[in-house]
Image 1 (tube, helix red, strand yellow):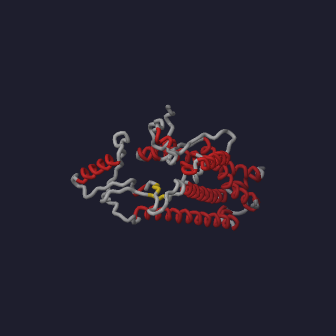
Image 2 (cartoon, helix red, strand yellow):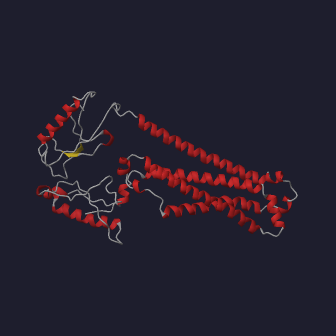
Image 3 (cartoon, one colour):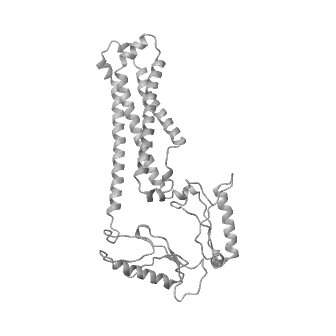
Length: 359
């Protein structure tokens, strides 16, 4: 089959081939290594699919107790499977973004309050010329909303530029093996969310100063000078509260960023039990048609180790099933000596790694 060019599943896959099982492999029910992907019917929930497949698994367990007893079914959504292990990281980023948004709102509200305080006489003159308080509030809210929308537009342009820069600077193998990274873009939902948050932020940032200003005695403002009007007790308390809020939010962000940097530094300096410096690794995949017997595989790797060790600058070489940076879970079933034979579902298993003597 031919898929669309933008399809990225599994990550990094460029070619699909049909699953060609031999007669022996196709009838061997002890092999449980394949995963199944299916599209759920419209109106059918994941829970219903789980229940239906679990019923089939239980029926197979009764019909074939030696190979299928104890094997169940777990049905999850594809998005949940692809994003497994990244939710906490995404939640941390969303929390940081929320704090930055709150910090920006508080900062803008404080600036708006200072700006309005300096315009109190202007507003008092407008009232004296016949403007209602609702008209003043509406004017201030319109100014605040326009300011927030302009900031949102600049933020969207900055985000697009940043994503283009990110995609251009990442190595190709990272782009190929991180699900959805090559398709990262601003879609309509993100754009709508951004505009909605900008609108609400503008209203909140302008509403408090506007309401505070509307409660003032506008008649007294014309009698006061600008300096005394801008330093009224009510405005001072509100601005002090906003400043304290800014400091508190910024402190939370700084502490969180410091913890993340410290954790990343610990990952780079953690002692893993071996010296990671001056170590090179590579993967080898043998053709099953050419290396069908274990002796052939063993001879091949023995020859590889000998030739690698003979290269200038090589101190030692070894082979292992999977590298320490991503140990593969190679489950091996075993039976203890002296124990009677057990069925496949009863035999214990352990994670095993095959290594050469010098590993």
